[in-house]
Figure 1 (cartoon, protein in one colour):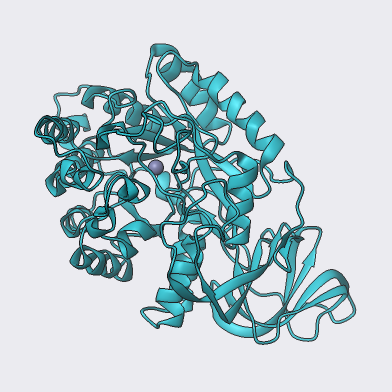
Figure 2 (cartoon, rainbow, N blue to C red):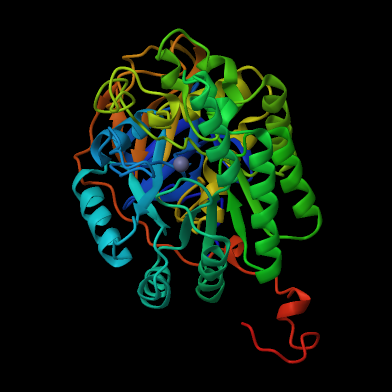
Length: 497
Ligand SMILES: [Zn+2]
């Protein structure tokens, strides 16, 4: 289905709702017009549209609701610790930040049936979510049952993305297991997303640091050397090349990592890449605080340097990196979360991750639009349209177009907000970006035409979000160029696909 961005609307029709007179960002550009909504969908874009109810958006921006394609919600981590957010608290926080669709994880741990895992997460989300949602299938136990039965069925039923880890003892896959998973994805049509860092280097570095007494949070960053990102990106890219299976490299943190992605794309390998606000706005210095305070800024990979930030922005500008997700991975700064291993943990005993669902869009809007680093169109692309397209949510999600779901955030471009530790709507209790003053904030948020946030109040009931089953997107399809070993014409006729 291809949606028309325009339908000027019949002046005789009275729609359910019209958002009047805002500056609307469609896939075609930005202009002042009305957005008419009927039955939860965008029914017309134009001027002078009539409705039973109107929302005045004069002086405001009318943007597609954000799509956050990487967040950990109500989930057991690779380290075995439960997130502090439920679907209710995480998606509430997302909604206040202008995000209307999230992709979180159905996280298989070893011994779990993937089918049961998806059922369990579906039940949790169905009870709590206020935004729409989908799941990445997180595979850490690629048994024959998982690979041959559950994974194909789940992909074909609309769970079109897979997450694999190249590090973390409890969840990482070996190279040959990754190839197995990629082959199934290729056959059935799914994106393979990866946490790509070299496991051995991280483990070896961390052991040496801890053995020498370098245990404070700031050494977490040192234990994830820059080169471990380069090595794992390069390795996974060659797997992608071998099998002609598209991949998404999650959370690019270094200039060299972005360069590896750029080169691979130049070679015609179908690799996509994401970065996150923590790599655009934080550095290793944020972890360098007295005592355990730096634990609040610990995430993997760690924030790097200001020159990495510049390189990542350039990568986004050039299209080498296509999406900015939050990697929301919430843990409270107390014994239920970051300090679960007691009052004197070494950095290896502290959970990795930061909250970011609510601040992703305002941080990027401030930098890209208010401060003028980029454009409103590019902001919409990175935070909504591109993730929706790559992950098979488009055309229902990610753009303001006739026929799309009426997922809309109305922004006040002039509103200034100073972030504080207790100003968010998640269940984390701190904000790694506290103290920053941002210009531009989403004030009214609609999901499928229903107002879910207005006047700083949540208006949606827990469980009103809906599961989004997805089709195979263009991004998920192989290029069709087989590596020689997979081409029967050049491999002595061997049939490997
Ligand atoms: Zn993550």
